[in-house]
Structures are given as structure tokens and as C-alpha cells.
Length: 150
Image (cartoon, rainbow, N blue to C red; front, side):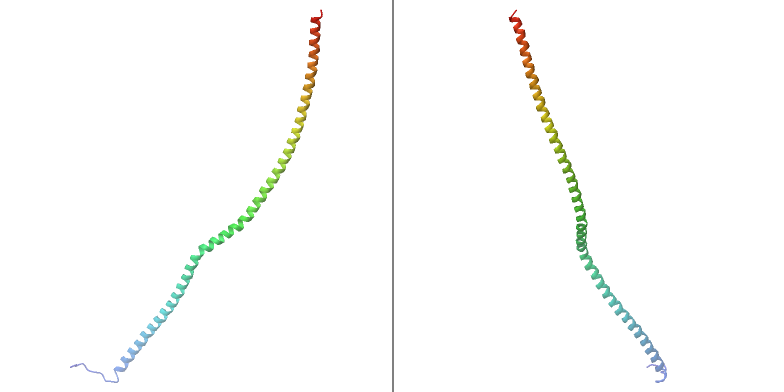
């Protein structure tokens, strides 16, 4: 048997029970606080996971969007440059064409002058040659006449 003295039923059990109840209430409050914090963290975690998913989805689509945007930007930038380049080349070609037409006209004019000069020189050479032939014939005739007629 137990030989330890037992306190009176109503006096000693009440303060111990109250302290135990206060301890239980304190622990339950702490547990409830921790549960609330865990629920808040869990909700925050779910929000963060959704945000991470959104970021991951964006990162998957981003290169394609960037490629389209880059292609559009390059095309929009290249068109004016290409048009300006074409206009500059066309202006240079027009200027060159005008110069070449002018040079061709001058060359044709010089060719006509040269052709006329060549014809004149040929006519002069024929006249001089004919005159020289006539003169040579006269001189030969005179020489032959003096030799044959003594």
C-alpha cells in the first residue's frame, strides 16, 4: 500500500488542476498559433508556386516572342535602309547613265569628224596622187621625147 499522505480532496487538486489547465491552454494557444502560421506559410507557398509557374511559362514563351519581336524590328529597320540604299543606287545609276549617254554622243560626233577627215585626206591623197601621176607621165613623156628625138 501507499504510505504517502494524501491531500484533502478539494484543496490540493484544484490549484494543480488549474495550473495544468493553464499549461494546456498555453500549449494549445501556441499550437493554434503555429497551425495558423503554417497555414499562412502554406498559402504563401502556394502563391509562390503559382508565381514560379507563371515565370516558368513566361520563360518558355519568351524566346519565341523575342524572336518574333526581333524579326519584326529588323524588318522594320531594314526596309527604310534598303529603300534609301535603292534610291541612292538608282540616283547613281541615273547620273552614270546620263554621263555615259553624253560620252556616247561625243564619241559619235568625234567618230563622224574623224570619218569626214579620213575621207578628205583620202580625196586629197587621190588628187595629189593623180596630179603626181599626170606630172610624172608628162615628165616621162618629155624625157622619152628628148631621148627619142635628138
